[in-house]
Length: 139
Image 1 (cartoon, rainbow, N blue to C red):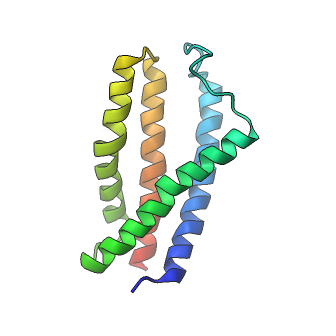
Image 2: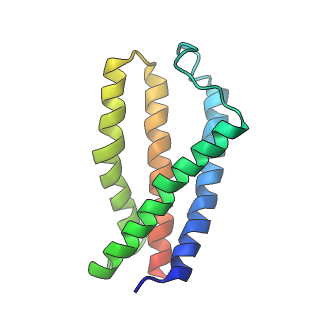
């Protein structure tokens, strides 16, 4: 059966990690001025409402869905630990995020530093969340 307490721990700890890393990456992106070469029509204006919606969406895709999937796979295949979490993150990143951003960069002329920073931030968010989830299932 599912451990509801463990799932809630995963939601809270990975959610806090996601909040902190999202704030740090946003701060770093502003300091590095990575969006300078991009047209204003392509950029969203960032305000509190946009940040809240973006966080809820990232929480759903980086925390809720991986936690539920990890708990299902844990019943069938007892994989646990940080390595299993990072392996799952690399698998999802390689099959999901990387091809989508690479194909987008071919269709729309975006600066390469912006694309590389976006790929790195996706990998850090997904890898950190799944590493925390894997670690909590190891305990």
